[in-house]
Length: 209
Image (cartoon, rainbow, N blue to C red):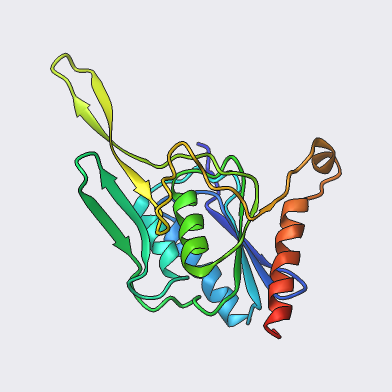
């Protein structure tokens, strides 16, 4: 049995909460709620939402997590079907983290639900994306069983961000591009996280926080 972690969080010395989300699985909503409440209870000055190498998961989990950051009824993502029909997913509730400054860490391993949340926060909250261009996985697929017992996977729709950007095949380019080198890994350094914290601290300084 291999147990993959869902989420880790820790407060920095500068009172910035680093939330690292590994997967949008069924455990993620509760784990994220724990991290969000910890940020509020400990009076964090801001949040670094780290979704590097997060391959995604359930759409409803992405909507749940985006809810924490957005105003009621703000668009999170739209499913656009081949025939032109659309289904739009909007924020519910009052966004408990709406007033909390946030930056988002992404890389080329960030896909699917990660891209939905990252794109929604940038489009609706002007949150900066730090790191590398994301994977570009934004399609909705269905399985059709055939008479010979085989299964066919069909792409039936694409995800569209509030700005109108189609995720599939494009990915999201970061606002601040930062790469990690082999030497960084050997030296156990994380320049992407360091840059995210610096960016957030600069934004906090401008607002007097």
